[in-house]
Length: 272
Image 1 (cartoon, one colour):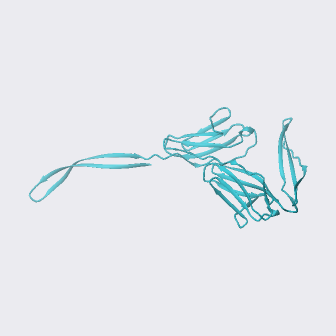
Image 2 (image 1 turned 45 degrees about the vertical axis):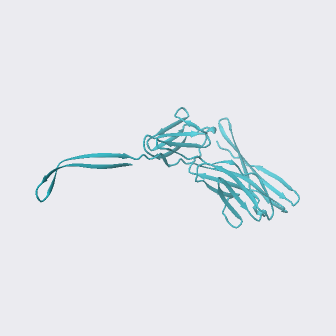
Image 3 (image 1 turned 90 degrees about the vertical axis):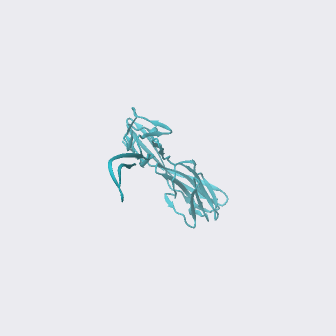
């Protein structure tokens, strides 16, 4: 931001007579003064989460603004990434691009972009769970409390899901997020409350999630949990072979004990 002040200085010839005073300018000098108000560095467009196939290149991009000179850098796990055989970093006065030339399995994870100048710096830390959900048990007709601890730059948005269906606050469910604790309270427990619960935390820098199973005691019923899919990828003679294992869990809960019966089947698929 540039503010200009103009000061005009004049000299006058004074002639006195009996009735009046006359002022006549004889010269004029113009002086200009400039006041520069520096702008702190700020990120105007954040990088988006991406998914790539191992071996393919990957690209992350951020745009920013602020008074020059600006220093931009990319980090992973607290380590600055610089141009070399693995990475290529290209930065201008308003944009920075990180390119991973050939992705490997170890390249998965959270990346952080930071920009700074003499006024200040702007860095958004992706969310992470410092305490995750765990298996929880409740008694029929009572309450269940699910909670996890989230860290990262605010504002953070929290969403709760049960078996892939989003949970909204209502008479049965109470969702809160206060002092970095994501909290879900479920009242009047019954058989349909049994299942897998997921907490999703997101901000402009990224998204994370964690899950836990809720059991309800005091029931005399049979409940089927959703399919759980496990995948593995192996390389055979230069070809990628992908196996998928689907588990269907049959949960039998009685008033006296809790018994788990598992049944599963294989469904292989191939990618070459």
